[in-house]
Image (cartoon, rainbow, N blue to C red; front, side, top):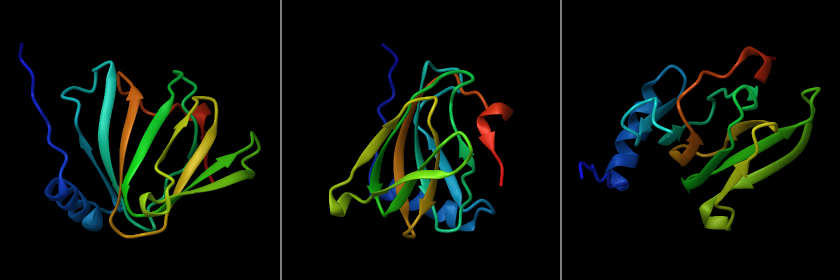
Length: 138
């Protein structure tokens, strides 16, 4: 069996966060999966306040998106088909809201509230860029 164990620790979170802070998009992925074609994509996402995550869904192809917040705070915004906010849910592990599973047809975005915010995300693979019909651009 050829397996690679990936330890997720403070050092990994800190180094990924440091990269996010200096990246133009104010976010950085650290892929746990070894190949973008893996049937399950698993990653850390370091997110800084001010990063722009457009309103999107994962319908083409259909993929649920699951994530757990490891540190920091963010709001998950859920939208109707016209791009109007239907619900805002705050995730913060210190306040007892730890994550979400979002079905592929649900429009959503994230608003990062604290520096150093980190989520662990899981989606079906293989990786596919978000389809144009699955984006609502401002």
